[in-house]
Length: 235
Image 1 (cartoon, one colour):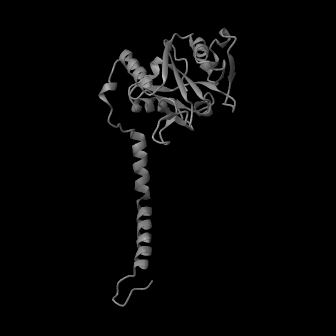
Image 2 (cartoon, one colour):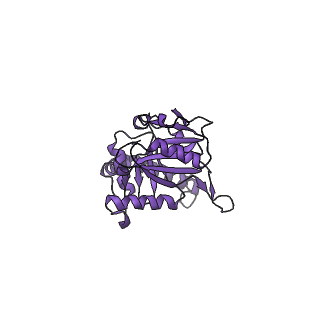
Image 3 (cartoon, rainbow, N blue to C red):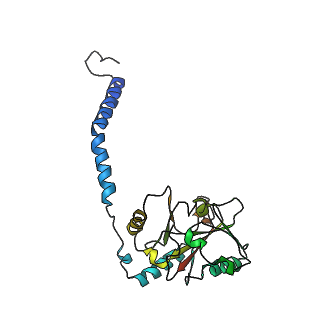
């Protein structure tokens, strides 16, 4: 690896020394890099926000519904006490078993599930034989009809991915215009969760012969129950 007869470094020596110089430079800049990351995390800079999301609450809800339906989700609006009926009727209307695994969120637990005695309701993490789940959502993002969910004791992450049918309960007052507004709600909720999920329609892929297939890596059905007049779920 010594210099050749002309005094020039060999390619191997130049590569080694170049790597050492880059590493030394990176170490010198590490403190500045950490400071830059901390500043960015504290500032929460905004990206470009679509003008179509600058709407009053009513039209914003309608935009969310339209966007969610455009990506093959189904949506209905109910009163504060209508969630158990909406869940039972949705399953019956699609000839699905009258059995759901519900996230142990306090607001979901407090619902009058016994109004539908034929509906078998279990609370807790997803099990291998669960065909349908009911979970809360932290926010609905009207920009793309996307749901933002946060994991925690009241919302085991597996309920979002394992059952083939995912039913989400979302208070209308938690519909926001942009992704940035959704992240604001997440930060305001307290400590960052282990997992935050963005769900836009049912799971799908077009990897196989460029043909869209539902239920690829998660639920093949996504049903959103918008609840008027209550913060029924918030996880």
